[in-house]
Length: 146
Image (cartoon, rainbow, N blue to C red; front, side, top):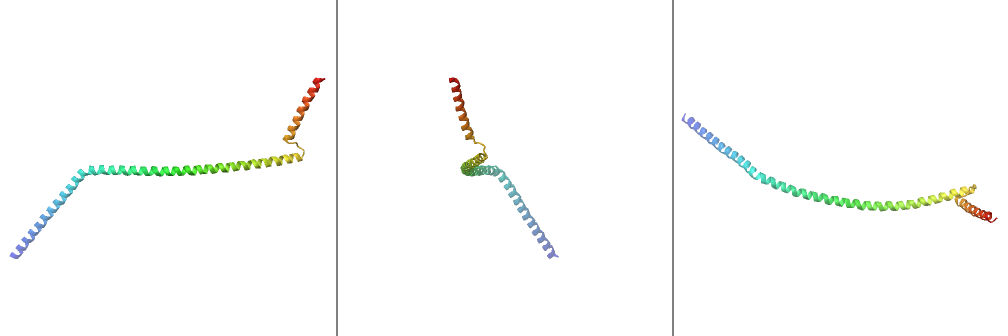
């Protein structure tokens, strides 16, 4: 029986030693957690300020980059706009010349057709009107001299 009592006593001492060690480690873990919390509280505000500073720097760089890209895009738009405007002006000028040619050709054809069927042209009417004015002036002159 003495062997059994010695074994039980050894097991109890071993168990209490393990429990004691576990309590010590648990306390150390607890203290480490409290230390981390305290350190985070102390350094946290400083770290937050550093993060804000870094964020402000990144924001400035981002705004600068965006502004540069917007300016580059605007200059490209202005370049394309001026090219398109000059092309439109050129085409418009050519179109107006062609329209003038078409109008003159149409006027000539209509005048020719009207002349063929015996309708006088504008120039014919103007010439007759000028001759009538001369004749009227001559008749008035003759009437006064009598």
